Image 1 (cartoon, rainbow, N blue to C red):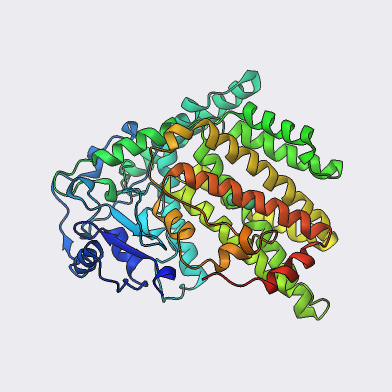
Image 2: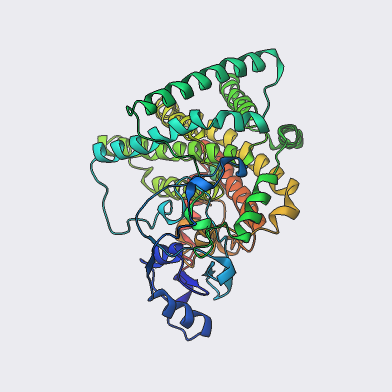
Length: 471
Ligand SMILES: [Fe+2]
Ligand SMILES: [Fe+2]
């Protein structure tokens, strides 16, 4: 059963990424020179001391367009990715093809620390322990956001517009300067710990020279060139509506939807990856809220007919989680302020949707249909506008793991309008393929949300029961 086992192999020495990601996975058994080499290499896991030249302080924040993060640690670290030495991880897809994936991971939870394989086989600590650890990490990031002016970097790519915007920016800049001085003053009196400048993930460095690998430099540069026009997204949405693809919705739901869209346009103008990361953080919440409510109704003994629907919603949430991790791997979650906004917005959104589902499941599904249709337009516009550039970039590791896995179960499960021969078999050779896949995933979410409103989802599930599973 080779097809439903994924493998990560290193072409040279093992990368930290491949070691951690490969840990819970089986190495394939079919003889293959490349795989045999990779398997042998995986056994030679070693640690090396950080080179003297590898000094995070020497990396200027200003060199970094998107504000990437460095998790500074003084301990030994596992020898990391180095493309020049042939250490980029590769992924073996379901057909046995070798897929080159990005050598670098630019997420705040850098590299394998972000993937869901991290901590495989463990259960979390107590909520207090986790909350405190997260607070300690984010507290440092909050201080950095003032001291190294993350907000100025946002304004550099998204300048304030109009008198109100400029006045808000001036007031905000004054607050940032004030907190920055206060932080420095407290640090000088040893009331706060010393704060190092932000730097880059250690995985992007050549362990021999201490400098960033050429591949990582190029990819970072290209990611910074990706563009998204708000106007083009709106044009696309209006064209869809004019062609009969609009979503019927009450005026107050439409009002909330438009408010959210305007917020995204203003806060994330010229920052498409951050915008997508925000959206995907929030996008998981509807499905979580539906599962919550369906489960609750079952527990109360009120209504059990939706039990099968929970499987669909879980598969949808699983799909959104992978969209989120893809955006993280591209650096969408690097800034403290973006994480703060998205994660708090997600919790508020969840509570609102639980309340909305309580009052009217149709309205809750209707609102999601609106959002998902907007996501189709946004990702479609982004993929078209950046096609040439995206085609020159490899997919992130997590995208290959999700779209090329031999296990189709959760991938098929959320696409309730598809069955038999129409089931999707996505490709994932480049970052362009990744965004096309995400666009198409969002399109399937639209269909499922519509089917949940008119109850045709029950017919879809009936067909699904009779469809042979793909493995
Ligand atoms: Fe999504
Ligand atoms: Fe979605």
